[in-house]
Length: 310
Image (tube, rainbow, N blue to C red; front, side):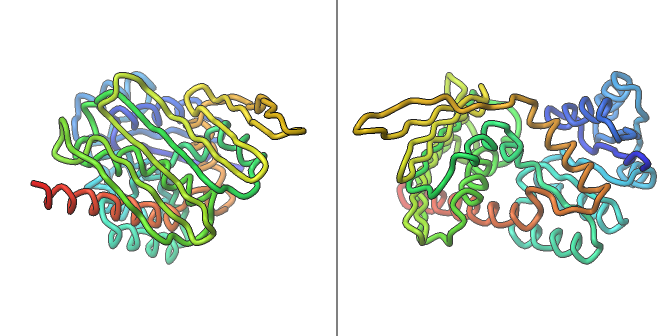
């Protein structure tokens, strides 16, 4: 079977990591890249020995598939360009910056019978896979995602930047309609919120409490899941986990076995395999659009509350 010809649009912080992995990923011919900043594109292209294209249009003419790792407000236009020309797309999260544009990309990919995958990387974290093997019926989920101020992705608030990862994971784990969402947040260094909390209640009784900050002095990506027979705790960074069970009126701790690997490599490898076999991606456009819709509701609640208190 022939290799999949792949390109990258946007080689900022995230896009250059895609370029790094594509440059040595089996089954891939890494054709080249495009970035609005020609000097940056040339530097990355030279590093990985690939061609630098002068336009996105020029790149799409030579590839089967592409990563779109540009600012969120350009996702709809650029991903739509590639899809409309029959190219498979992996677009970084969030899929777009509004739900109508997300739906249009989903419809376009479906009509063209193309793969549209969205970069919700935690779904490829081996720690989450290990957790799912132990999961029965979640009753309460607590997620903390903290980072230092990034100086990037500040065109969107922390909910669309970071919390959306946990929203998508929780939707995947619970798989029940949402009953209510209660959110708070505030801006500190950005125009949008830099710290946020959302409490999501589901029809099946599960409650998820999500806390996200990009003004922390420490980095943390953890999720805790409480179910009827156990409490599971996972660290996305360390790719480690423990499970606490009740045994004869005592709490017994057991380490969860995790086969460590690089989540982004697993994500891109899965994308290429979906392109090759025309399988549905683990996180396709439809799932990402639902996560975006919930994230937008959280963002709107925060904005309304802050406007009332101003």
